[in-house]
Amino acid sequence: MKKLFALLLAVSLLMSLAAAAGAETGLEAIKAKGKLVMGTEATYPPYEYLDDNAQFAGCDIWLAQQIAEALGVELEIQDMSFDGIIPAVRAGQIDIGIAAFTVTPERAEVIDFSEQYELSNQLLIVKAGNAEKYSAKDAMAGLKVGAQLGTIQSQLVSSALPDSELFELPTYPELALETINGNIVGFVVDQAVGESMIASSNGQLEAANFTFTKEEASFGKAAVLAKGQDDLLAAINEVILRVVNDGTYQAAYDAAVAATGTED
Image (cartoon, rainbow, N blue to C red; front, top):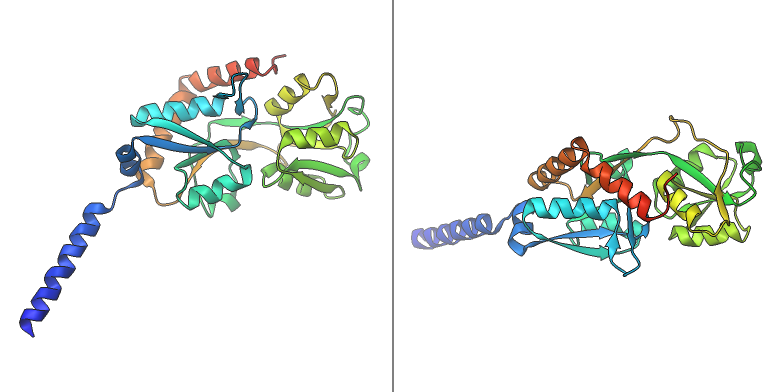
């Protein structure tokens, strides 16, 4: 019996040691595989989009590249639906999500946010000629106002425009088409993205003369990653704080804005 007990104890100890040896932190696992897998939704210029050569571009892509370089690994980008990014992060299918994510308490319950790297105002984009028509909330009462599915903008429409009907679609190009066709009042979107869409709409879209209050909409952008990866989060935050403080993120943002036709 003693020999059997000793054997079982030895096996248990070996298994524990093997498990400990095989347990890698998030940062160690990324370095071991030699790549950082990023999830994004590339229809959101200037943050993330496909350029004329079908290559990923935008200030969020630039940020992801800075993080990968700091970690000493390659960057792999997976383009997916926006509302699928957080589930993919939680399931370990991707290492990080960078897609102009707004920091919210609800999201923070299921994922970890990095330090914020940008703060964005929100625009209501309407069909050209309707800027004054939809300048007040009561003008939109009972009408459909659009937002991308699974975004903070959907929550904003519901909370700030409670008398309007929330209308959601997977992408903003789809919402733009519904707006141009007169099926919805318009859609709510980050300022730089809205300006880019206006610039590329051949005069069919414009910003409504409508402003959300700071209390209603003051949205900070951050990367998302799975909970419990403190070493990876610390490394990402180090990069974000550096590029924000030294102005290089702002320069990348400005370049992306210029490239997508959103300059004043």
